[in-house]
Length: 459
Image 1 (cartoon, rainbow, N blue to C red):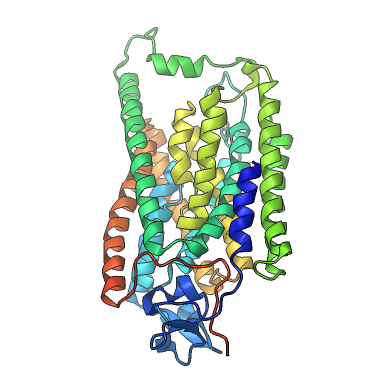
Image 2 (image 1 turned 45 degrees about the vertical axis):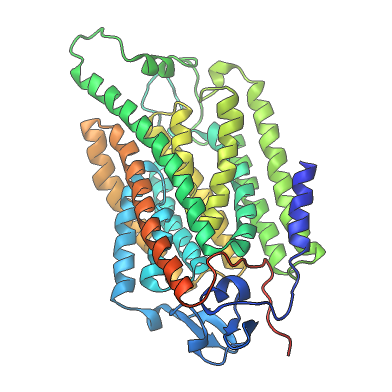
């Protein structure tokens, strides 16, 4: 832990302004922040007109490049992006994921937005989707009458969210440094692994669903995997619909992060207060994770709502760290990465969907609020896409999920996750190649790095 804090402190300390930083036209957002790139001198400087700014959605306002209003940038492609976002999120809500792997490159390509703005709008859409999804989910009970508890697995959520929030903080730093191409490569590799694990789980669930349909003898034994899941725990175990301790821990983790994000916005980038506001929420969330894991380890196994072992309580929560980082760095909701983890932890498809939805809800809001405080969230775009996300949840819940439950096809929940991941890989590949070609043709470098505290030329 000490070595981790030293590395993070080192990164934050050496990000102070270095005036006259070298840049290129198409990579100016990464290297110059709100400033433009003087093409003749190749350094960050104030803009004089909108044509100095890249990409096309940017406008020059008082010497800085900012994204133009939604009304000024509204076009057929913008509307198409919103319609596609509606469809993607409607499928994603079935699996409890946001679909940011599709949304980010789509917003960049169709709306001509910088990737930082696209990440913020992806989170806005996912916030709208996950908000309505949580309203539907919080009142549901676990389908097995032997377990009197909520469908949301609050114990596992409380174990995952603190590390997920830490991931969003680290990802927020990396998002300002990493080249756009590196972001896309990281997301591509991550999704390839997640897709493989998800498809394997989908095949297993499909066989299980087919078995249920084929069983005609009333005393037939279910598959071995199902026996191990259904017979785990005490048949008399019960949990209130809204467990106070778990909900309190989740809210503390969330609000601690929001408060320190607000404090950081009042500090000077790179100073002691700025660094302190990054380190403290990481420390508090780490303490909360270790405390809650210790508390669960002291409980009777029959009182646990998930399979307890080192993989589910150590390895999988570390995946939540990656999920949080991916949320801030790559614009995905977090559930896209954690989806396969929830199935590996022996949660049934319906339970994994709503549990992943809750994790997505908190991670997306944590990231969106951080971007809002830092001034990187576009309010007008965000409000519209928040509404698009909510509308997509209505379609996913009332049409798609209702039919899945009616026909008892649980594997389709996992299939929807695989569809979103596969679509993300396809869109990322196309956009990544396109973006690399544009950068190279205009004389830029596809591996230019940025700074946590962007700089401009001294005058």
